[in-house]
Length: 150
Image (cartoon, rainbow, N blue to C red; front, side, top):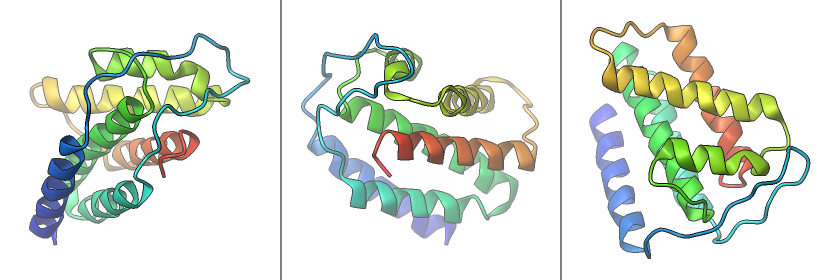
C-alpha cells in the first residue's frame, strides 16, 4: 500500500507540475476577518486523491507518519502556490496567506505543522511522537479546507 501510494503521489505531482505556469504575484495584507479570493481554482479531485494517499501512508508506522507529514506539507505548499501567493519558500507563502485564514488557531496550526516538517527534514535524530504527527496532519487538513483546496 505504501509503495502504491508513493507511485500515485509521484504521478499526480508530475501531472501538476506540467500545468504550472510559474510563480504568481499577489497576496493579501488583510487581517483575520476577510479571506482573499483565490487567483486560480484548485484541482480539488487531485488534492483529495493525494490527501487520501497521505492518510493511508500515515497508517504505516513511524516511517509512514514521517512521509505523510512531508507530503502534507508539499500539498499545502502546492495549494498556497496555486492560490497565487508570493514567496520563494513555503514559509514566505504561509506568511502571505495570513489574510486567507479567518481563524488564527487554524493559521497557527498550519505553522506548527510546517515547523514539524522542517524539524523532520533538518534535525538529525529528531524523535517524532505519534500524537504530535497526527495533530500536524489534522492541522494540514484544516488549513487545506480553509483555503478551499480540500
